[in-house]
Amino acid sequence: MLRFATTLSFALATAYCAAQDGMLGTKGDTASQFTPSTSSGGGLLQMVLAVIVVMVLMKLFLPKMMAKYGSKLSTGLNSAIKVEESASFAGGSIHLVTVKGRTLLLGSTPTTITTLADLGEAPKNDPGPTFMEMVEAAPVRDFPTPPSVDQMRAAIQVAEENEAAIALQRLNQLMR
Image 1 (cartoon, rainbow, N blue to C red):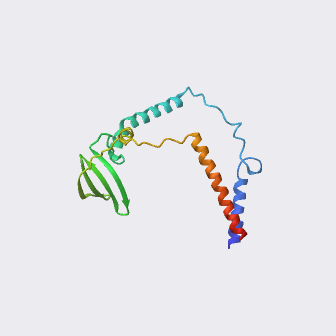
Image 2 (image 1 turned 135 degrees about the vertical axis):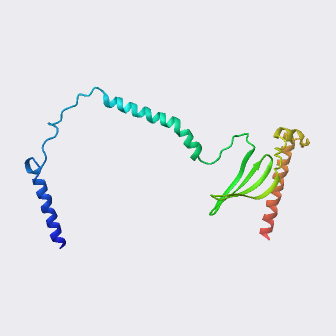
Image 3 (image 1 turned 180 degrees about the horizontal axis):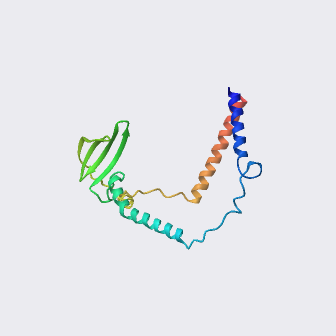
């Protein structure tokens, strides 16, 4: 049955190609039949008008659409509402929000917002002293003066003598 369907489809395709005008069932040359239109720029004018209409519609309706379907609420830099932290989970999310000096823990789902806890007044952000203030407040320590060159030479000579004495002791122990 499959062989019959394949043979029939090839036969129909061959008959269709033979039915075309042209040699070997191909269509005639369409390039020689092309005649350019003698347009006076009407198509260009229509395209420019369409672009202008689209730009005007975007200018008028896009701000209204963004206000209605815009993304999440954004507050200014000096706003009284600040989102300190957020965490998402499968059912929704929780947010730590500071509103006019009070810290709130809010739970939100796609349909509701619930106050989970009122944490009270927000702690004051005391930055502490600056580095220069800490340096100026640090106690002044008296460090010992470094040894002189003569003292260094004497210490090196003592160390060399001690080294020789230690080597001599080892040698005596090995000889026993």
